[in-house]
Length: 110
Image 1 (cartoon, rainbow, N blue to C red):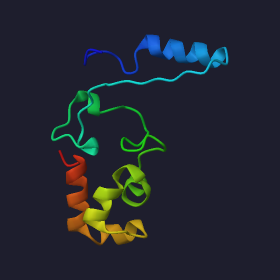
Image 2: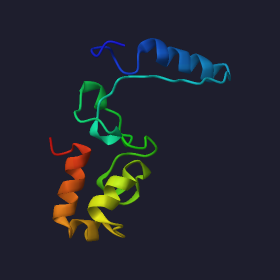
Image 3: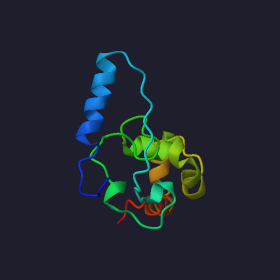
Image 4: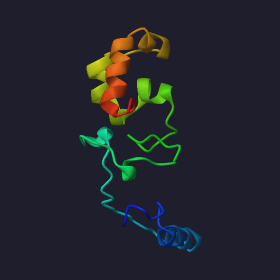
């Protein structure tokens, strides 16, 4: 899939709709070459950025600061390394150095 192509491709959207309309099971697997710090890459590229509101790390719920800083399982190791185990967003904000380190590792300060 060329980097300039729409994500997801029109054909994939049509296939998903067809399967949903006809109660057909569908398994989708891709290698999109999305480079992003969240999954261990040293650099980010256009494929690593999305317009989706879903969390880039877990793809389960909307990506909000509270979700990422307190709940997201996709960044649990990075969060623990920089912030420990904060029980509230207010507590995390009290550790500005840790929070900046966490966001930097995730590539959010670029």
